[in-house]
Amino acid sequence: MKNSNKLLSLEGLRGVASFIVLLSHIQLIFFIDIDDKLLNYYTGKFPYFITQGLNYIFRALHDGNFSVWLFWVMSGFVLSIGYFKKKEISQTKSYILASSIKRYFRLVIPVFLSVMFAYFLLTNDMMTNKYLSEKLENPWLNTFYTFDASFYNAIKSSLYDTFFNFDRLSSYNTVLWTMEKEFYGSLFIFALLSIVGYTKIRYIIYPFVTIILYTLNIHWLNSFIFGMILCDLYINTQIYHSTTKLLQKRFINLLIIIIFLVLIGMQNYYGIFHLILATLLVFFIISSSNMNKFFSSKILVSLGKISFSLYLIHLPILCSITGMLYKFFEKIYSHNITIIISSILTIVISLLLAILLNKLGDNTGINLGKKISLWIQEIDKNKQQKL
Image (cartoon, rainbow, N blue to C red):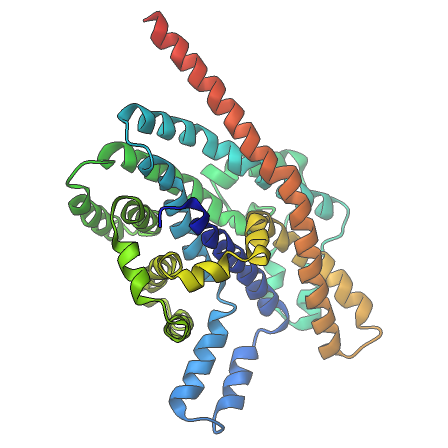
């Protein structure tokens, strides 16, 4: 069960979550009332509980908010696994130092490219979100790019504001609101690992920390902690092995997935319901050999590899290319056909540009982070030798 190949399923799950974020924003543009329309369609044709279940399941398939919680839980897991795989204290210290240094550079390069892409579109008057807002009578679209393009502000936004002082009104890419939390959440995990790490009372400390964070109204950090706990259990216990035996039957897996979809489609009760569901879903995917196999498929793993880039690039596309597509096709087809064609082409273009951004930004960020980390560690090593 400790085979790292098993964790390819998390890559696939991340790909699905990123794709759902894209769908959620397309829904907010073209299909804002589709949930109510489908609910009206179901009503009277099925019993009440089936009608509500179908409504919740459909909502879950375009719930971008849940996907964000899922991203954070998986980040906590992935960022912790390198630590828990190491048994020597010197190795764990080295891992935390290297990971902390790499984190900013791993994130900032693709973020920078996505912001500069948006800056290019805005500078060349290629943003069409205001046009679509008026055409579709959609005020949500009119909240983006309400400022004039500034090269200095674009650079500052990508390198500093996104991670340390995010402001939605001045951001060139508003989905970057999660990056500040992703960055601080990562550092928080590294700090917590360095403190509790392999201490025997860490399972007592975990709940105390989560309660404190919830009380301080920063419980989004708990998503990273829950991911860290899942990783701790994965590496240091047999709990996943035990649950795997209970999840052999495919119909049981299918039933659990349906239950998850119904619950995800409900409200995020008390602000923690999605956090709990995201944690349980990650646990379930890793525990189930059937789910592991499904989410480890080549298509989903490939989608997972470009998931970060897809997440970063899709909003500037929606605010520019999508409107261009709509403006072109509305002259040829009816409104309904136009929004369907525009949506499909938006998805295709987003995937293609995400592949490009992944090659230019994601991989570059990872490699740059490694080089800078090794350089700083070498300096630190030389200082220690002189002492």
